[in-house]
Image 1: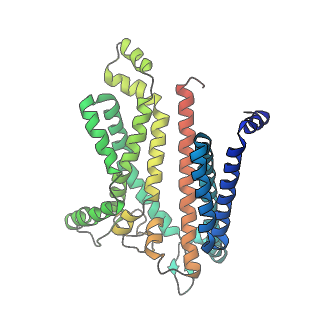
Image 2: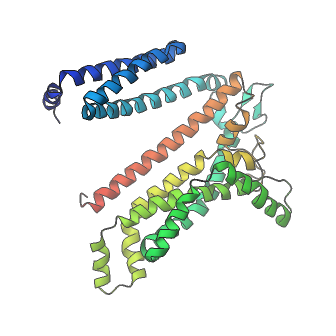
Amino acid sequence: MSTGTRFEAFQDIDRGTRLIGLTSGLALLAVLLAFLVAAQFVVYPFVVFLVSVAYGWYAYQESTAKILMFFTTVSTVIILGLITVYLFIKSIPAFRTMGLDILLKTNQPLWERASNTYSLAPMIWGTVLTTIIAMVIAAPLGIAGALFISEIAPKWAREIIKPAIEMLAGIPSIVYGFLGWVVVTEYFYSELQLSNFSSLMVAGIMVGVMALPTVVSVAEDAIASVPGSTKDGSLALGASDWQTIKSVTFPTAFSGISAAVILGVGRAVGETMAATVILGHQQAFPDPLYDVWEGTETLTSLIASQYGIATGTQLSALFAAGVILFLTVLTLSIGSQIIEDRRRKRLGGEE
């Protein structure tokens, strides 16, 4: 829509709707400013906003609904921007004190309040190992589950299995962590005669189970969006159902399946409570580095276990861990969106 067209559309809005939009918009802006400067006065502009919206809903319901949706979208962007700015500002003291050592330091001490030394390298390594283990579990099982639900399972089974898998996402992460600690950790400790009662392996297994619903749901949507004519053409040429799945459906939906795996990785990277319950909270590298039976730390469990006692540079280092998590998950989300967009263009014949 051109600028002229937008202006004409604005001109078509009646005066009352414009007044409601202006009043509620100024009230929202006042709420934001009061929240940042004088929180005790937030209630007054908020009441003005509610009154103006209530009147607008009574007198101009359709226009008021559009205005509210616009404000909701703008507020979401503003809140996300404020969170991002606050996160980066709070992490500056740690980066100023440690420099790149906050990411790269590998020699002792790694995390010590007495010497004001804080390195996130062990936690980054722990996060990488946990995520790899989780995706070794979630990616193949998730893709296989999505293919079964979409292409193989009879209708009655699909109606049972899909909601059941999606219900896994509704189980609180603390429950996964508790089950991992009580059941899985106990099993490995007794059967493998481990030297400690916490390990990255158990954390990775539980996080992988938690990432399964994400992978299955997104991958199943990608597989279901493959045009039926494409599969029918393969079957008409004499291919079996399995040959069609293997050679037509899966390659066509591959970009969407890749996006599902990437979103699953983001879920694994950002998981907090399960890892916090299971891991032993040692700010040190496993020895050797590939030893997944050691109980080290992840970025999320570090924040969850130390934010209550952290001050000064230590608190800033936790914000730095948050920045790393934020950038990682943001990159994964953007990557999945790019892949999804390519899939839509390919299936829509735009490529």
